[in-house]
Structure formats: structure tokens, C-alpha cells
Image 1 (cartoon, helix red, strand yellow):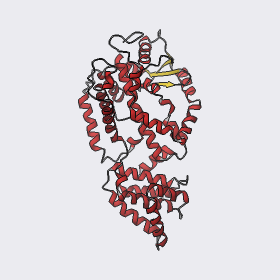
Image 2 (cartoon, rainbow, N blue to C red):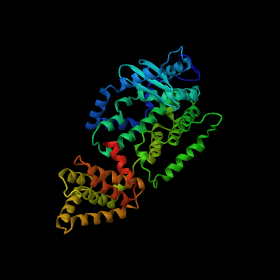
Image 3 (cartoon, helix red, strand yellow):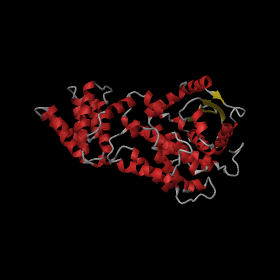
Image 4 (cartoon, one colour):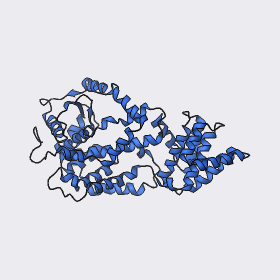
Length: 417
């Protein structure tokens, strides 16, 4: 482990090289989200409260404040990571707390201080280079300003946040982890250490039980990708972290990139930044809702008639619901549906039949796309800011028709209520 500065085996990269490590798609997504007035307001409110003070108080009360006389190895590792991340102007408060769960965090508390906390088990389980990766990862969140978008706090604080916005926030969180992993790699400068750190934290094993082979582990990612079109579990869309095999694959790609050559002398430099980012985006698709439904006429009909079914189940379609249907489907098609419904002898029966026809055609779509259709219909249901039990019941019927688990409705609602 280096002393007060990176040793000969650890290069101190330039500030420009560290800045360049940030995943471009993540930076762009964060900028776009913070331009959304509703999200920007919620983020500002979350940052202005005392949550960070409360976290620091918990650390003072339940953790051990660490100095170089107590755990010198940890202090040196944090100092090394801080210098590599070019956060020299920040003061560090360092805590260790008792926990069997391997966790680490570095919170930018907004006044020039970084509050770093580590569970006892992560210090005991990781070797020095692996620990540098874990610390560097957390420093990455600070270095790239991720504090400015507290995604989970935004979701929890914003009543009625549209599920589409929730999806975008979760998608950004996963990309933020990729950015942070890159700085972790810059800190440990060792692909093996970076990948074994991820595996140890995820599976709990250590040497000698853990005999890790990156190629075999990445093969799991290929299996995940092959299942992504048929899997019915949509919980991945609400995960703040990418699949671990995806993160390992991303680090392996990074190790062969020109970006890493700017950090570690002798790195292969086979891959341009643009090609690297494109590869990571291709991996992340396995955790995203589908987009094929947007091109299918049957999907537009499904949203149109499903929207009317949800909206009309309480006896009338309110203006906000009608406007949402027009946005989600097509205004011209919505006007034609209005006329057809007005002329029908039994409007509810007409609406359900039209939806059933569209839903049957949509069963050919991948699971992710059918979940995306339900997501849009939840937006319609919440357009008037109320969501009654009968509307939930209709949404569950819609799930059944599209072969989507009805639990998906509750998942969306828990995230956005």
C-alpha cells in the first residue's frame, strides 16, 4: 500500500485524464434530468435538508472516527484515492462501523468535507488494492458531482412522479455506477483487483474459497443478455446498480481502452472512448425497458384503448386523462376513438374489445416492451392525480392480457407515490 502519495507502481494521473473517465452517457443523462423543472426542484429540496447532517450524526454516535494512529492503512488508502481523484482541496472525515455487510460510502456534505464510512467487514475482506478500488469508486461519485442528483430522494419526495421519469432516474443511477467504477479502476490501477473487489462484495467469498476467472464470470453477462427479451422480472429497471457481470465486463473493456492508457502506462489502448462507451451502452440495454413497442401499430392501439379502459372505469373520462391518452397514443387516433365510443351502444364493451384485440397482437413483443406499455397506462391512470382501487384492478387485468406480472403495477406505484 502506498504511503502518503502513489508509489512507483501507482501513477498519479492528470486532472484532465480523471475528468475524461466519466461515462459520457451518464453525464448527458444527468444534465437532461436536472433540466427537468420537477426533478430539479425535488433535488434542490433534498439537498437543502439535514439528511447529510443526520448521517454524520449517526456515524459519530455509532461508528469509530478513524485517524492515522488508529487504522493507518485505511487512512493512507483514502489519502491515495483522494489524490488520484484530484480532490486534494476536500477535508476527509473517516469512520468505521461494525457490520457483516460489506459497504462503503463517501458523502460530499457540501462544505468542502467528504464523510467516508466503511463497514468493518469490507476492510477485513478486501486486500489493499481491492480496497483502493472500493474507495476510488466512492470518490468517483464525489468527483463527478453525483450528489447534485439524489435520485432516490427525488423519487420519494415527489408525489405522483411519472413512471417514465422514475425509469430515467434509475437508468442514470446505473450509468453513474459505471462512471464511479472507472475512477475506482484509476485508483487501484489493477483489473484483477477491481474485478475481485466487486465479486467479494457481491458474493461474500474470499480467498482461498474464491478462485475468480473473469472470462467465466463475464459469460454470465452473455446469458443475461440472451434472456433479456423473454424474462418477465422487470425489477432490474428499478435497480440503482448494474448487474455485477455487466460491471466486470465494463471494467475489462476499460482496461483495453485509450482512456486507461491515459492513467496507466503500457495499457493496450485498443479502444477509442466512443467505441468503449458504445460497448457499455450495449451491455446496459439488458436492464432497460424495450423500445420496439414504439414502432408497432398494435402497441399504439393497446395504449389508446387501454388508456380509455382505465380512464372510463369510474364512469367518465376526465380532461387530464383524455389529454394523457392523446400524448401517449396519437391525437388523431384518439379523436377517432372518441367518435367511435360516442356512437357505440355499449361503450365499455367496445373499449374492452378493442383493447383485447390490440393486446393479443402485442403478445409477440418482447417482455420488456409489454412492461413499457403497462408503464404508459399507469401514467394515464394517474393523470388526474387520483388512483382508485377500480383503476388498479383494471391495470391488473391489462397486465394479465399482456402476460405481465400484476406485481409490476405495485412496483411502479411504490416507486412514485
